[in-house]
Image 1 (cartoon, rainbow, N blue to C red):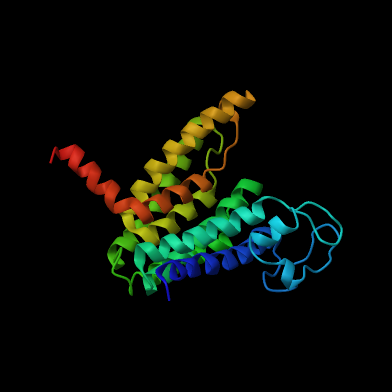
Image 2: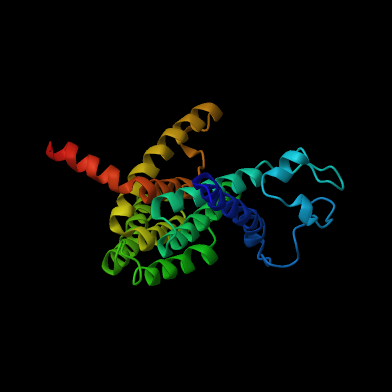
Length: 259
């Protein structure tokens, strides 16, 4: 079996999982089952045949439209499928075929679902983040990184830092600047990535969020009151740490110490 073919398998598997994540993104906020009924067109309610439910390819073949009624499907569907496929590949390249790869791929999948729900509705469902905290803490007993102690410190620090920021902003302005969902999300990230992961996630997520926030505010002329969900930026920061965190920390220490 060639090496190229072996690398294709994680992408294909990830894209298939991405198709399921699309179901979660749509149904979880509505409180619907993610298992039943099978996928159907939101417009005509016709069940989508299995041969038109191939990740990414079906969207291209059908030109992004329902085969029954012709209603256009959101571009989000192939984007989520392709992104999950790529993360499946990246996870195997980073951790190999291991238990670590499985755990962190599940973590990435949760971040993808949270990202698109937050972008759509500006909410982060507790049904994802709170079990995620527990899963991250339990997984720390069986994985070499971040370790049990760092995992618990990360969960407490992640939730605690954002809680204090949100509380301080509310006390200073009388307005909520950050939702409780972001607090629980960073606690979940800390449980999986430890306290170092919390720091990298906050720094990177805040920087990218600030840049995009300024661009959007200038583009739409909303001043400082333009509401931007922070969850996607936290998720992006967590992904950066997961795949590049060791390099970033090593580079920073070298720059700070002059070594």
